[in-house]
Length: 440
Image 1 (cartoon, rainbow, N blue to C red):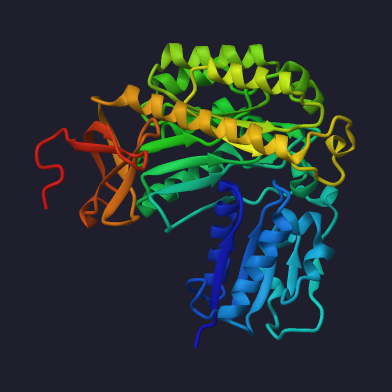
Image 2: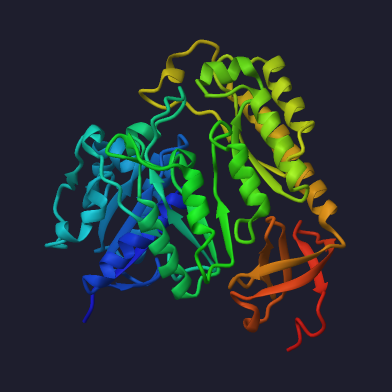
């Protein structure tokens, strides 16, 4: 009888691509992948370290896992496992902790699944982690997350990612293209390019060998993929040539996610970001000039040390006046061993929460305004396999989320539809733009 394994992923798209790759290793070793509640023999939990409650989330998932399968062998991997291996090894029920280098050699360590009194830890110093391991998610959704880059050479004062993932390193263009061909053959229609700092693609063994723009051009030639989406790219690395290429491309979609973090130049300086807000304004203007319908998402942090009410209002007004489509709002949390944690000007928790709430409301307003601009247009939607209260969802090329009555025929299919109205839950209702698109 084959042994069973279940996976749980916390955090970013990059983590999802890596969990999927580790899952394929388990399959090759004879394990059957089952759901979280299906009494697996092994749980693998892939952790994140971006927010301050990584520890709390990890403990909760372990506790829930052991409710369903009390004798299961529990393995923890991911950023949090690299940063705090000892802390994780002391969580009741954890059997093995694997660091950044070790997580992709997981099957080598699975010689014995007997639970021991103490957890085993394999975790080498991050300075020694310099290999790029290619990954992509597979078989679980319409779109595939394809990892093209890992690690980061930037030293933003709030961030633990370089300590959790090491220095910037990448795949080769040839390898990424061959994976895109594999993905196309699997039937997935959309690829999302992911990494820690994907605009920095092209570094191997500490030397720059390629540029992200060259990768974009090469992927545009891959047959069988309908859409390619760039997940998140630093404003200083989003060049005009990339924007111009995406605007002319049939495959790359008009959707950018560009981290800002603050609209105050003073705070950007304290964060050690590599641009000022004026550059950000230029990038947004260039995108909108060439692609007026483009969706632009923004990361922003509130409550950073030294952020006064005036600084926050500076950010708020900057974002309010910018032609963007939605925000991802992060409330600043102190992280050990970061320069920001030692900075003066701590912002009280209640103020952080108030600022976060203001930006969440602004995000809702921006998204609604963007959706309203799209109403009446005919757009191609790629439908997903989800089903909720009789509806299924899909996304336009420019990331408008639409809903239609569930129809199994539409799963992983592209259809041209007319965007008609915003529903009560904030998605967009559609009607057929081509007769009998939704005929049953």
